[in-house]
Length: 123
Length: 182
Image (cartoon, rainbow over all chains, first blue to last red; front, side, top):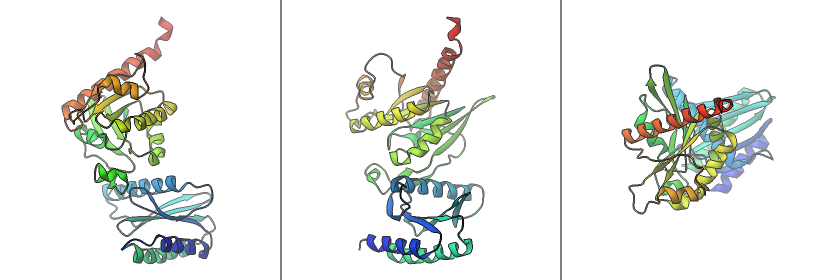
């Protein structure tokens, strides 16, 4: 059975529009290719995908090399917002971009929820 | 001293570093899902890092770049820190020469560091010779970087090319610092 890409996109779209202060989301393969995304205008999906994969892979490496265990998420905090990377099933990485105003607790819960939704389609 | 190993997909960059590093190589390999799968199963997505104590007061840090151009932000980060770099080209895959040329011009635009061209996979059927590869890379006259044949799976061969790269680096350094003497 093939992956339902439209459904993946729909889930991401719902997530971005339904969660306040979330600006974009992208689902990519661990080797940095785009699967589905809803990104702010002006962001190149190829580049975003490659960066997400590189970042998560390095983060996981830091986790194992520096004895931090397996990595739940990678968190990039800038002065105008957040970027959160979470591994999603074996074959995907989820990147979520949120503005500085976002409530972090809500963001984490929402990410957890959307991942469980995405997993159903990916597996 | 920081050396960067670059080149097209599956030229032998990660193997090169694994052959010579004295620490366990920090790799960021992920299962490939693009056209890379035709060549190999895993591909580097951030960088490979290896270290070699060259002499008591000189440690070499080797950084391997990803091959695919979607990771060009990593190329950019790595090349700006490099003292010298080597471009690996698989001599038996002429379809990649144009891409290798693109990699090379990307690097040259961002860094004046000396470069060495390493030909790999020369033991495969129908490898091109150095002269023709140089032409394919855009070097039409004698003014080209040194070319060396290297087998990334053999530590001695890799060591030789690293020596050549360091030598090339020292020569260019001497050229840069003493122009006023002439």
